[in-house]
Image (spheres, rainbow, N blue to C red):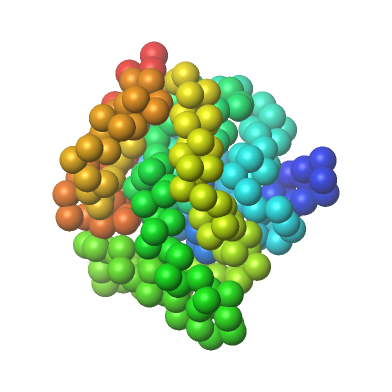
Length: 260
């Protein structure tokens, strides 16, 4: 397992395939870089694809803290060590928030956020009723996480759904560390955090959703991240890239073409 050791001594696991334009893939909460398995080979026909395990996930070390800035910095150390320059950043779910934080402070050529709405105060409203269970015993915590993720599966079904579910490794301290701002911050503080990230992103930004974030979301996002594009693939659920992999690979390619 190749890994980069960050300045605070945390091993961040990664792998790579292909050659060409650099592209970094970042997975969702409780998952790992293996979630991207079906997409690596077709993307590697054009890109140098680097997949990273976030700290607390996959084969990376589980070392606090787990805030967005720290995880984005971890990826920055991988990018620097591999001399990737200004890669195209692609993140799903939590990874979408991480690559957004990355783009606010570190060099990249563009960002694709897969099904992670940045209007975090809305997710906060849905999450807070689960807080006692999330902070309770391990069985209750794991059940709550499974319920949240299962509710978003959408069109992901059969063997592919089973594959993704088998990859999940919910760690209570890691999830609570990631979700602390959602559980403890005020809505105003969350809005201010998102505004600070959004105002610092100056590269092209595509927000691609399988769950419709609502009719007002695209306008709000374009005002938060200048020029951001919101695209909805209706009824595909939280994993549009895995439900429609060929379409997703093509869309990544057209987005990359627009950056040339």
